[in-house]
Amino acid sequence: MDDFEFNITGTHIWYYYCCPREVWLMLHQVNPDEDDANMDLGRFIHEMTYGRDKSKEISLGNIRLDIVRQDKEGLVIGEVKKSSKYLKSARMQLAFYLAELKRRGIEATGELLFPKEKKKESVTLTADIEKELMKAIAAIHCIAAESRPPQARKIGLCKNCAYKEFCWA
Amino acid sequence: MKKTLYIFSNGQLRRKDNTIFFMNEEGEQKYIPVEDTAELMVFGEVDINKRFLEFCSQQEIIVHYFNNYGYYSGTFYPREHYNSGYMILRQAEAYLNMESRVSLAQKFVTGAAQNIRQVLKYYQNRDKEVGRQLQEIEELSTKIKETCDISVLMGIEGNIREYYYKAFDVIHGQSEFVFEGRSKRPPQNAMNTLISFGNSIVYSTVLSEIYKTHLDPRIGYLHATNFRRFSLNLDIAEIFKPILVDRVIFTLIGKKMISKRDFKKDSGGLMLKENGRRVFVEELENRLKTTITHRGIGNPVSYRRLMRLELYKLEKHLMGESVYEPFVTQW
Ligand code: SF4
Image (cartoon, rainbow over all chains, first blue to last red):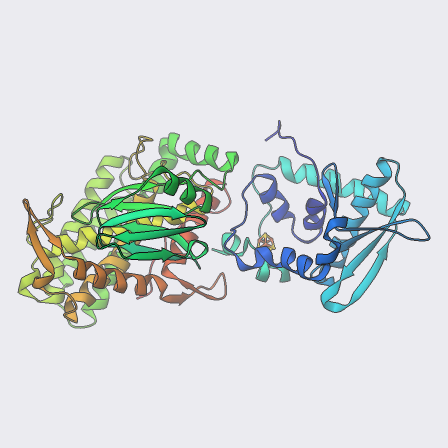
């Protein structure tokens, strides 16, 4: 898989922090089972909660932003999540979007939204976070180059993961 | 889980707006809930058109056809919706490398033999005299690993089945269903008709499950690949036939749910009448829905789902993750 090209997306970043195996599977188009009830939950929560704001969803190259808002302090982008359980993943995913915007000359801050828990968290792009992002991106390229996926490790996410049966059959 | 719809009567299948309907010869219409349907099993003489097929393709509904005898005759397989170049290459690679092809073929035959053994053991525990057949099958099973030739492997499997079928009469003990040797195309007696009918459904059920994976149904390992026919489903079906089809047959005749009256003679063969087919299919569907606990996944899975898991295990084998081991029933 050496001549294998792809664009890293926020989703890859998200999975990298909770399950690198899922990153590999996605990159090799070993897609999860669409019949799986968990597949649609994220989309469902999104539509149910922020249905009104849907027109505000914007795409920028290979990134898709859930919510964009102009505040007194500047541009704020929001990302909606099912739960705050994988906070690190969510934070880095949003940081990735902020970095992508910065690359295009747009300064913004981020806001993580957990509608189910009625919680919010803000994310700003610091030098440390940027450095960490670079490392994650490099690591994802390494994972992609592997001829087989990283071993399955049972984590909390498996229970609701669309790859569950694939990994644990 | 989406459903399987069986069509036994003659008529027409059509698209109407965003639904499908079936109109039988008497002109009665039945609407088919598309969001809820994964596959159609067509046994009757059914007339279709392009508009209907395009709609099935769009909705990812698979259509399996069976001939007069209830034999599998073909499938409308909507364009592949899961596609992984990586997986296709791995699948072909394992086929082209004789050593890896044979080792997979051996696994399928071993899985079939072990499940046959479990079926016989089950009846032995119920005081059926199948000890001799069991012993013969165990001896033959040891030969599976010794061969590195696919056709020899097929031969061993054939011999295992021969002994296995000899046990059928002992298991059900009913004279109207004596086995009298395997006859196909068309089957010559009631038992053969039942076996062929059940096997056909299992072949198409596995094929529908393959559709939900990244595997190409045309590349099988035990059953030769010629790219014009589906063969991977035949491989996987070997493992499930004894525990699904044969167990269902014993139930059907043991409980007298099917009798001689459910068959009719037809140009040189014996076929199951519509009512018999309905009863059979209902029992088989019940069995497919039956769940067993699965240690790895941690919740109950149905036999139909087990077919899918078998395919996932095969995918992982092809990816070089873990060596494929066939499913063997506990009872
Ligand atoms: S089931 Fe678990 S190990 Fe497999 S991809 Fe999902 S989270 Fe990762």
